Image 1 (spheres, rainbow, N blue to C red):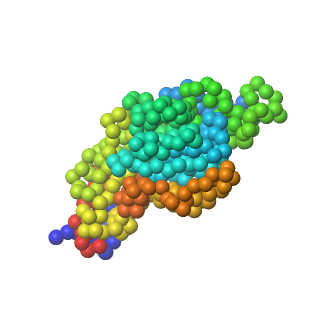
Image 2: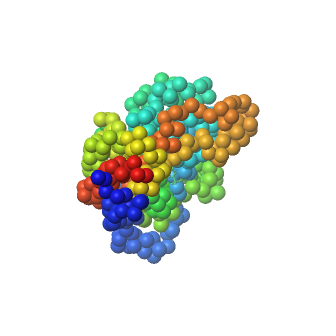
Image 3: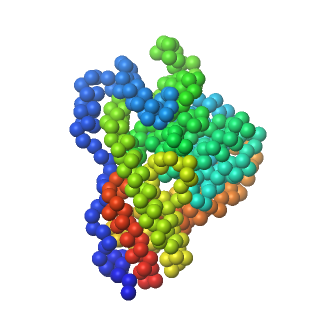
Length: 409
Ligand SMILES: Cc1ncc(COP(=O)(O)O)c(C=O)c1O
């Protein structure tokens, strides 16, 4: 007989909380006091903490240059402006991602073209990218979803063949590596976020990395009101705005960076262990890991739920049962092209540049994204992976318990 599920009045599988987020100590406190007392709170003066963080972060991500900005959304926008995107250009983005991947295109005047994801990895499907290319395509934005690197070899090869830029949306992929090299500067530019939930966190913050000096210069100008390095303060040469990071953010981020590699190893170890343990459960799998992924960023541990293996229990009810067992989890995204905000933005922009077109009357054909969003994808947050193997065992035990009791749900 199966154990009574907590959602039906039984004992929860776990009562302990998982590790909380954010993590901070005297390092963050001292760094903030240092900024306070220095009187240099922004880039004016010398902005030394910002520069130090740019260098340290770029180096940790195998890139030559880093440009700090105030969040990940504007990092994407600044990066696109640095690529000289023109009104009505098309940018290929996955349909399974956070809003900003697509709104950054719209803000830069370009039309996001949504493509489906691979069923195994939930990352942009290279075959779908190739099929979506038109004479107006300028950029491909692979998103390393949940910290799992997208198939960069295929995407870079397609980009080379069609003379397109690659902007990596690595906002969830701090520390992730593809074939031994950290993500972000495999393509032309890469963007990161330091928003509250992210694996390096200052509440808000963003970074653009690149190996190309010309693009580094251009992002600097765009992020700093269009100034040029050796120009005067009121000399504005490039269309840009104020996207600057503060010294407060940089100070916190430098402190967070001191823990980062250790935490990244812990997440990797627990993520691998959890994925391995889940293989014994029918109908509940971790996403596939390509052997070329040499480090998973594990911003999220994403798994795939098959209702058929759980007496047809819909995902929402399964999630409620898991939460009642003491395991926090969630269902994730809605296909981006279904968002009214995106539909309105695409409609407006197409109208402004005189383009006719189906979308949003005819939605993109993305069956894998639809399935991931409506019934399959389940997320566990990064801080849960900062615990122990026993914590991972509790997650697995709760899934097994809910599966055994599913007929009563
Ligand atoms: C894939 C992706 N892109 C972009 C962003 C935007 O970053 P931010 O929240 O710092 O603006 C996020 C953050 O949630 C993200 O997950």
